[in-house]
Length: 177
Image 1 (tube, rainbow, N blue to C red):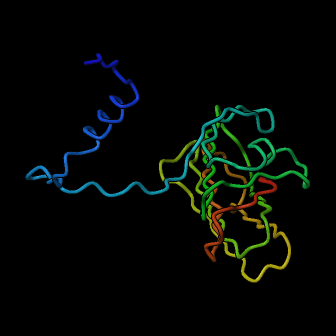
Image 2: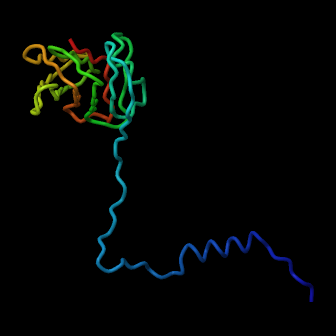
Image 3: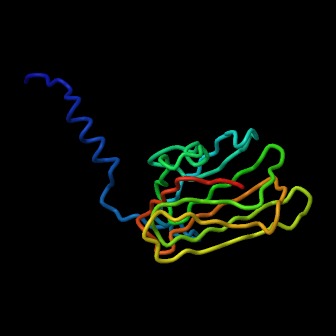
């Protein structure tokens, strides 16, 4: 009788088959709920940039085109596009304070909703401003006035595609005025 040599490939295949299952159905552990399948969750990033000479911690959705600085560069020809969102939330935490009487946001062509929440430097209660623009045929500029000059330490800018869209929101510019 001739001795046989171990065959690594065959042994690996048998090991994989054993690990894959023994043919018995899995039963949940008593008292535990089934775990739902993973869903797509938008990824948020945080960056530090300078806006009008003030350092700002900015939390924003992941962009698949452009970059955060494109939103604040004053150039109409640059833009950033969200990777997966029907609402793009750009949360600006100023290292210090910012004064502005309003904001202009230029977006891609869509029915757009804009909401800005300001955390004031001297008051606990935030100020909330919003506006919707429907039936836009070109890239709209959505302007919100803050009812006079406000001094704030945080601004949360929410840009929503009111029709849902394809998960991409184009933002050309965010300009405090």
